[in-house]
Amino acid sequence: MFSLRKLLIMSLFSFLLGACDKNGNPIQEFGLDKLEKGVSTEAEVRMVMGKPDTVWEDDDGSRTLEYPKGPAGSRTWMFHIDKGGKLRDYEQVLTMENFARIKPGMSEDDVRRMLGKPRSVAQYKRKKEEVWDWKYLEGPNDRLFNVHFDINTRKVTGTSTSDVNMGG
Image 1 (cartoon, rainbow, N blue to C red):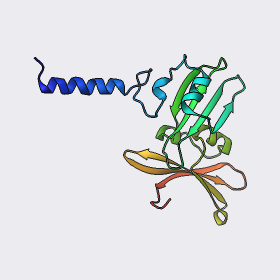
Image 2 (cartoon, rainbow, N blue to C red; image 1 turned 90 degrees about the horizontal axis):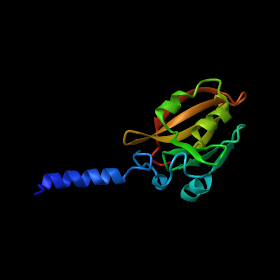
Image 3 (cartoon, one colour; image 1 turned 60 degrees about the horizontal axis):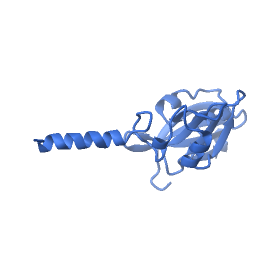
Image 4 (cartoon, rainbow, N blue to C red; image 1 turned 180 degrees about the vertical axis):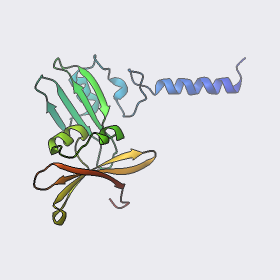
């Protein structure tokens, strides 16, 4: 005879198993559970995720499909398609690990390929800088990761984080 406690534990375990994608990872985005690395095609990725915001073409014939979920969202997905048209990997790129890779001297294109489309771009002419930002989750809170560029050289001068304004 099952106790109520055992039944609850089994139900929770079943729910948690159901909330994983085909690769065993927790589902973070609707549709990811329908895609499988090394098996799914680019067409299947597009069917599940929709039209990408940007397609990055690489010299070796591989491609990266970019899906920013902003400006209201706090995730940007990059789907890496091999030269044969199969899904090699996918990742949510707005992470502290990726932010730490942004270094002074990097180009705008380098940053854009790493983090995707920024939520907003603001110029500060007196400071001779342009600041791009991305909304991300820090625990349960939305925060902004900011990349500062020199207006003249278009190179990264630094990064910062800030709170999200309630009005925007």
